[in-house]
Image 1: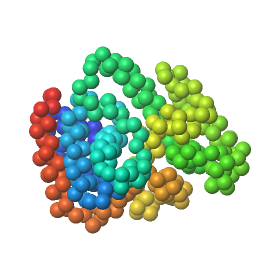
Image 2: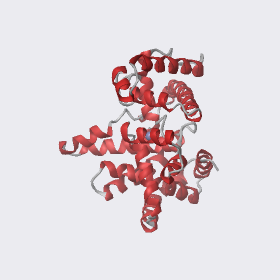
Image 3: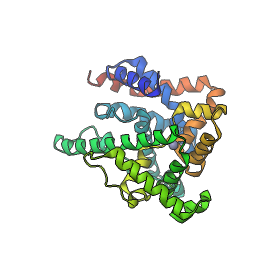
Image 4: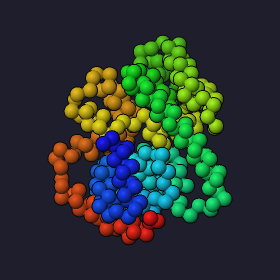
Length: 298
Ligand SMILES: [Zn+2]
């Protein structure tokens, strides 16, 4: 079963109040979420507390969950939100961690279970436009990967994630500046084709590729170019070809994707599977949240 199908299957069961499905869902995501939180917090216990709260927050906001969003993106957004709250509470000593976290404004609307219905219509429209855009960008990333156009992908991440200028991108990749401009032109053409005349689609100008554009913000928030867990598993097994390895190394280490790094850490630690720890954390998350499961609408 493909990862997103498994998610959909679990989610459907969870919404019906299926306790085993809720356990399975926790089990599936707790490792990567804990690895992520562990990178930001000094103590394992604090990381586990936040993971527990993340699952609780997820169940509480489940009625508002947009099923077109990847579950992982949503869970990481809740965790980021919790981390942000945590850092706000502590002293300035930990400021740097907050900067590292690089918080985008976590869409609070997803976490808000009591949205007035009047706002809902506008929000739904915006959410639909955003979902359409995200869908197109993901399609483009898939195309780049299947056609092995990794350099285009790297250039886009250098611009939108790292915020580099043409000149810097060119220097890093050993290209001429005109070649970088050529990649940008081509990418914008491809995006224009993909989004077509969908309502709310950007007109696609060069500025959309800059780090401070709203497209770039959505790119980072949604983890548009984040890797599938199965791909990362193959990366760790060393069975991918060189272009893939170079790209993954870039995405995780140069572009510094915390989410993919957390997944890699989690996959690495699965080998030395600490079953006791996994069971303990899962049961803890389960016990603290299961009350909300039964209260969810059927
Ligand atoms: Zn990533």
